[in-house]
Length: 581
Image (cartoon, rainbow, N blue to C red; front, side, top):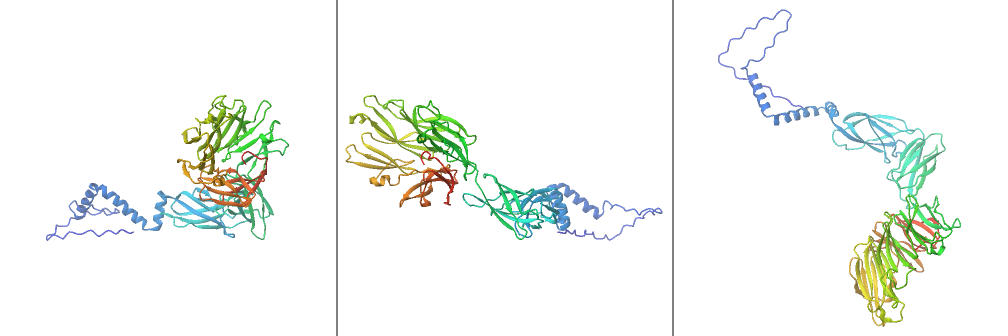
């Protein structure tokens, strides 16, 4: 705004005038002399008073002066932007689009006074540190006409994004990229073609331009978390050709295979491509005694296999997907039974074959941390003596979150039923690292005791008296105490399924029979809010692959992968049946 000053006030004239001073005549050719106001004049007195006030009130006078100057400058548009451009730098966003297809142009270089950037999959770029004011903007991209326009970089926040169209000089091609398994569109996928680079927008599409004389064009697609793909684009001089491509999520599925004639450990991409042997058979493997179990996050693979002639029994190995290096995790004259994975820890039981039935430690419950190579003894069976010949067995082992819930029951080879009078069966819980060990409940060992998992976090307990006259049922939910419930024997086993936790522990899935077929069901961590994702099918649960994908099997020898939303399973490979599937 303009600031106008008021005219200075004049003093009233005195009654008697002082005689006028006589000015000296000017020398010939010289400028007339301008005399300063006399010290006693009204102008001098006003100025002197203002100067003294200004100096003594700098706390207010100086900021006020600055504000007045800014208002004066800001009131004139040209001076406003000229001045702001000297000190003020802003972020400025533009959008570049194809003038014909009216679609975003990604990979275009946009420059304003030495500041440049590249448009993203939505055709937008934000340049930082641009001087405010009227600026010249340049847009360049191969197979498009270069363009130069004038833009106004505002002093205040930018209210709208300019959409600047550019003209293609070659053939336009539309590309759509989706996830092979889920069918979801993939944003920010990079398309490299004809020495140019483009990206897909939020809808998974991009319009690119290739040389005008090309009837087809090779391109490479890549996106973080997915396998790269080499594709051929269809082009046309008559229309904008549409090309649909799919990318496979990165990762490897490990499986047992006899396709070479020997029992090898193989791996393949999630779509079954690039299958290769990672652990070649030694010739000592036994088909009925070789088992494989991959961790839900896909990082480790456990293998029970007899690989040397000196092994009396199959040994336990763990392979890291990062380098496919096979390490022996546990060994001995024992039966190794893999229960499952909690994170990167394998839970398994060991049944020693070189100890008498009554000896302590005949049966053990262990965890193996694949990241550290550390083995932890979670629990072991108690013993008695050669006369009573009694020992504990692991009746049920349930993995629930970060905990291992397991039942231990006594048995005896003695014909004397009283040898177990002082013994107790038990249900116990322990963390995967061996901490927080607790006994959940105890029951007379002479009774018939069964532990049956009925949900991801629930176990039924049946305690039938030795004379079979009284049967009591309890329900144990992890984190609580067993409560007596009313059940029938049929209800006890009605929901006894294998519940598989996702790597995060937030979801579970299982399969249950319906009308002679199977339903594959997805639920939350407790099994609540179940959603049937495959109904009356030939598919059964196999495992998780990260939190995003489910592995299901068909016919016990075909492995499929699917999205958790229940899309049609995609076949990965045929395989030799693995443990627990």
